[in-house]
Image (cartoon, rainbow over all chains, first blue to last red; front, side):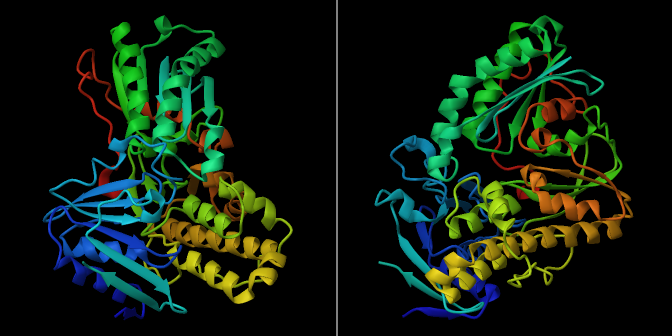
Length: 136
Length: 328
């Protein structure tokens, strides 16, 4: 059953709620169009994990790693065409057993990512969003 | 004389700069290969840096009519950026420095953008307020003394250049998005759409996520045909929103700090309407030439003059960093 969000604060809160169910080593794939609120969702999750300071789009550097109560990795594969031309070690620094990882634009990696949770954000007009969380 | 290297993203750069800020050479080798990927491919970027870096350094020395024997310091970008790409420059710089037993100055890329204005002939020295806006960074800095700056505000989500790139992609334009979007906008009406400029974001921080969403909705509401017919209007209005969002923060920053001098840096400073808008502010304005706004090694040399260099061989263990202080 998808959740409804009426704005960025609610989207952050949804991210914060999700982390209660997560453990180190988990990989959360966060899908959605440009502007759907993927980074906002991850910001809420990272805050709930004790990360301080700016949590911004990692598009430029592909990945960021933050120190929280557990390490938090934030990846964004938007600029990648695929992982075929990439060094397999590209993501290895981020997808580590001690960290909780969030991956934006996971579709760019095809099916190669080990996922424990799928999150999908969709525009629902104005600031509203539909947020679907699938956990196996 | 300083020999500087910069390989933080997709340009391989080397420069020779005198201690007084005179540029003797500034070589930039762009990797056109990225155009078809719509962005940077880290592994491809690193490989290309590796292929190009020695030739680029040789070119810089040749154009300067100098040899490594004339250098007193080697300078290099240590971060932030793509770690694999940074490491190519860093290891090359270590080797160059070690071969001549020279000191090595590790430089923060962002300090480089701030210090670019100090290069001759412009030689615009602190104090000033500095707006740095590029594909990876957008922040406002209070620069009181050379070699140091305090970040007053930075983006909460996307960088301004990233907003240009993503907007361009929504409008079906190629990468890099900034120049393509500016070209399309020239034939459009910038008042056609009222896009948000993050006025509600308090203080001196920037936000472009809402603008991105607004463009997406505008395209969707118009429908495919109408959106295609009005692409120039969409581009012009979107560009205006980015420029106004940047300008509002600059105005607030000038007021908060009392600065009467302003400098721009980063690739977005190449944007025509932004330069135009900034030139209307009642301040003494410095915008370096475009080749000193986009990534380059001369700005790294400029910043290196204010960094304590590590003597040989203390720099062998030096590592690159992807993210700088405060998440920038």
